[in-house]
Image (cartoon, rainbow, N blue to C red; front, side):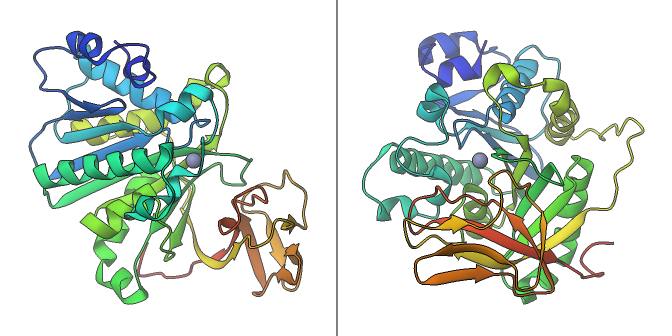
Length: 336
Ligand SMILES: [Zn+2]
């Protein structure tokens, strides 16, 4: 039984469905989209492989589906398991024509037809169908990725938040969300007000889901992943869907580091260049006035006393984000 093999077209739908245990009411909605009904106040979307080179979280979700089928774990809540981009996963590359994770919130209709536009439309429909079936109090979407580069905090999350007043209005919900991320082994959280059209942002803004884009270490080819590095996170996801208390196994978590976005730099010219080493780790810190990037007619410098760089990538398409900078987020009320 392999959710991955079916997603990658190595099993037909009929072959895959025949392997699913009859005692569970799994429904296969499309390649890479597997629905499991459930009861209760929680409905969970777990997605991975939105970028085809980020393999470890795909293996995590595949393993969880396997364990459900073997009756090793018994989910309590409704779940939608998604392996995001079959073609890119097959080709082991980030995307085919354009970045899938910028096409949600209907943005796929605004780009020319391509594999990613079709896939974003299908995934949006699937999430809509799921949250309509399970319009629960506690909708959650964990969109699992790996980063291209090293990070000072290797396991971090980008959490969409609306405006400042909404953040305080939803303070209790945000505090519980941050606490869950910490229990999942996440070390740092970027609270982002940017309307980014990412998969997790769409679930947050359209359905009010507690949503996050999780970066779970560095992206590696299939065979190079050490899945022991992901065991703790996998166990946490299992505890979520089974509603069991997570066994922290004596691990103590340091306080989550919270950041907010200081600047977003969009590549507007082909000669956009980063002013620091290509392998600089995410969250590396720069001082006020330091040059971060440049392109014809423009320089990008640190404005605050200190800013940390996130997701630097000069190779993105023109019009796409090439760099974010962060500042520490200080709000004692939000998270204690
Ligand atoms: Zn990714």
